Length: 101
Image (tube, rainbow, N blue to C red; front, side, top):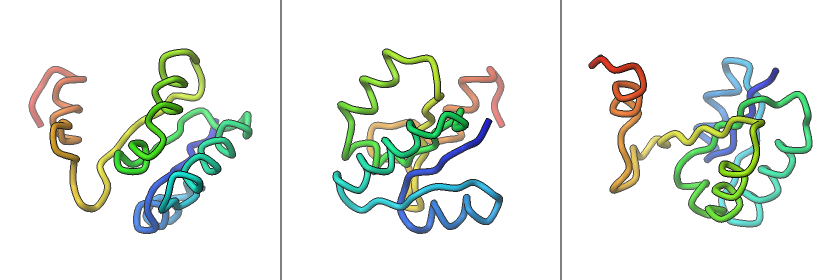
């Protein structure tokens, strides 16, 4: 099972440094293309997508999250931090494991 990152250039570069392949996107068309490329690769089990890029294709991401089992889609903040109204990564982890880090 492989990971695949979709995000801005910094996010993709950072994940590439630890062996995770992916594509950068700056607009809706690029984000849709990258998302479909990740879905087409049957070895991809987890798609990591930055919140701001996910917002560009929100209907597609939400439709897939609520109708498919695989791959797992994880939204993460980009280098600018979490979007307004969204919990931080630390808050999500604390909630998921039930203890404060």
